[in-house]
Length: 61
Image 1 (tube, rainbow, N blue to C red):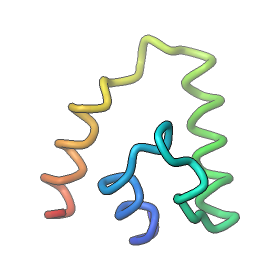
Image 2 (image 1 turned 135 degrees about the vertical axis):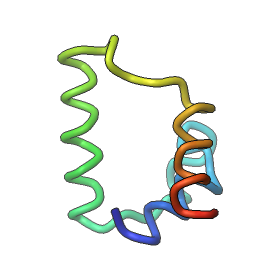
Image 3 (image 1 turned 90 degrees about the vertical axis):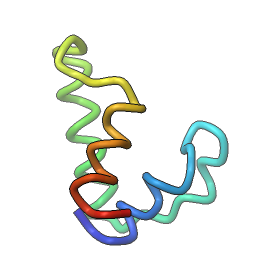
Image 4 (image 1 turned 45 degrees about the vertical axis):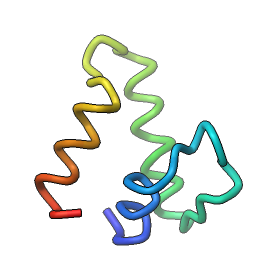
């Protein structure tokens, strides 16, 4: 995951300001793939608060 993508995830809510998030083509492709996997099995996801905390703990952001 690129540093830019990690920073965007931690600093912005895409739902609030989607045009403010700048993604590379590869980052967008990865997010599209993850979204498709989620739609195939939505029970495997985690709440945003938990995901954000995991990212902060892993990358020290």
